[in-house]
Length: 112
Length: 114
Image (cartoon, chains in turn cyan, purple):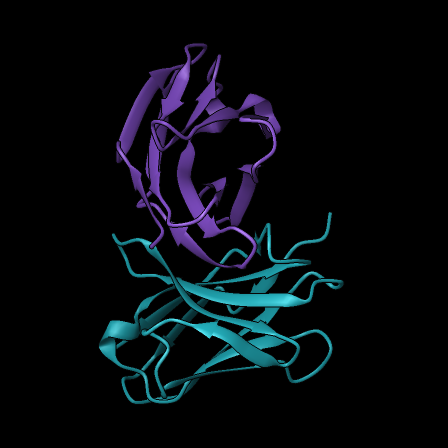
C-alpha cells in the first residue's frame, strides 16, 4: 500500500540554523500539507499546497517558513532561522482530492 | 469556525471489553469528520471518515463511529478491545467541500489491559 514517507525521522539543530524537512507524498496525489505537533499540544495545520502554490496557510506559517516541490516526488518544508519554539513533530500529508489526507510518520525537530 | 473536543485524554479498558472514545465537534459548515490512529513511532493512520453519507460509519479493525448532528458528536466505538488497539486516537474535522485544513482534537490515549 502506498505511503507518505518523511526524512529524517529526527533532526537536531542549533537555534538560528536553517533546516529542511523532506517528504515524499503518495505518487498520484495532488494536494500536500504540513502540520506540526508541539509536545503535549494539538496537531496544528501549517500549510497546504496545490498546483505548485500555497493554497492555504495558518498564522503559524510566517516568513520563516517556506514550502517547495522541487521535483515530481519531493515536498519540502524549510525553516530559515530556527527558534527554540520550533521544536515539534512535523507531519507531512497528501491527498488525491480535498477529502482524506494520508500522513507520514513525522520528523521530530529539536532546536537547541 | 471548526474545532473538535476529545473528552478523555486517557482511556483504559480490559482486553475483550468495549471501547468508547468520545469526540464532540463544532463546525460552521457541514463537516467532514475523521478518526486517525497513531501507534508509537508510526504515522497517522486513517480509521474511518464521515462525509455526509450514512451516519454510522464503519472503519478498519472493527471500529465504527456514529455521526449525531443533534449532539454534535462523533464517538468512536469497538465492541471488543484487542491488545493491538493500544495507541493514540485523534478526532479530526475539516471544512466540507473546501477540505484542505484539518482541525485535530488533543488525542485520546487508549490503554488495553490484558
